[in-house]
Image 1 (spheres, rainbow, N blue to C red):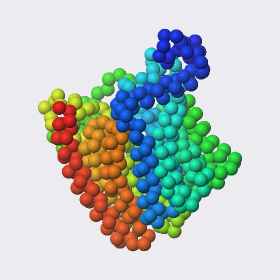
Image 2: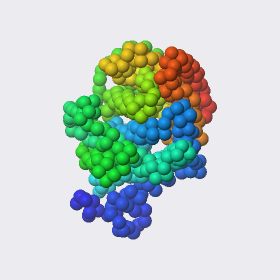
Image 3: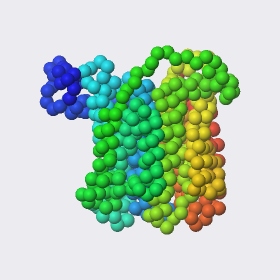
Image 4: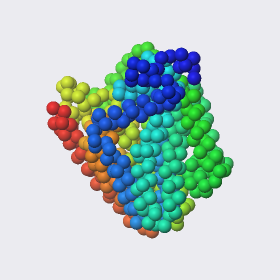
Length: 488
């Protein structure tokens, strides 16, 4: 504990009399959990309590559909670990996207995590406690219901109960590994960007050359072979990264005012932006912490996780899934993160005060969304030509932008300009999840069915993607009138 911490009055108590029971970190953790619950309860009321039930139902349904399609339960478990790791990476980008994102994404309601300026508590302590709070919160509210959904199918398939119960522990570890990885990269990045690149390249080279066993060094390794040795090897990196991330992170406050003469006009002219919304959005993202590079990083994480998942499915089964369909689908679905970034700096209410329709505002956001996400995804698809056939890459390059258009339309129509908040609203989450599943499930099945009928699988994937893109265009055009009526 720092000197400032130890000598300060209790910064977190609600009562005039300081509560000295427990350490400062413990009391901060309790207050952050209470704050999180109050936030969700105030925003969404009793509907929020149904969220774990929805996760369990969706999880069980997804596992069942995959097994019906011929995917083994072991491959499903591997996929869950990979997806949860990716989810952790995304959650950990709270540090990656930077200081302004902590304020703009989470908003003014997350008061404790922003209290380093006004209270005698160090920033690193607040961030470390915040990470622990998120780990407990997501483990209980998301991963436990997800494990219940998995168990409903796995037990009926003959999986031992102990192994099914183990899934919750190891997916929680995978989530911690993802969060720790993001935070550590962020922490190193605040000191040296070259060091981040060197770390990423070193890990990638180790995995590709076989010198680094990514499975054994993850909680999934313990899931496959539970033992003391695999526990140390599997959970050790997650624990080390979770500690190293907050320690390495060095918040940098915004500097003075920056100006770039004629940049607005140049960008607006380049993309032929009549209303200026797309130009404003692109400049906002570019000037935020992480700039447009966070989009490239996010797509890179998605690409890497997808490749690993497909490789694990191919290794654990007799299937040879289509990389092009799988990568295109997940890159398109993952573009949701880009939607969050292009809507994090303004609100729909703001545009009601301007001589601009909400339809024009959503159209501008769509342009910015596509300008940022599509090139970033295509970079990785083109790079995959090193080991994939041109046909596979071409299929992915067609599926990806079409699915991204669908994701934009659905997200705009369902959540408006507040995707991060409204997705915790259970009814909206159900609607959003069902809409994504309607496209994701047939595309995943097509990717898996590529082994038996490649031509049909590619045809189905392209057809589903085209229809989805058409639906996305319609929904994005209706988003403006819908939110205009709701906000009046």
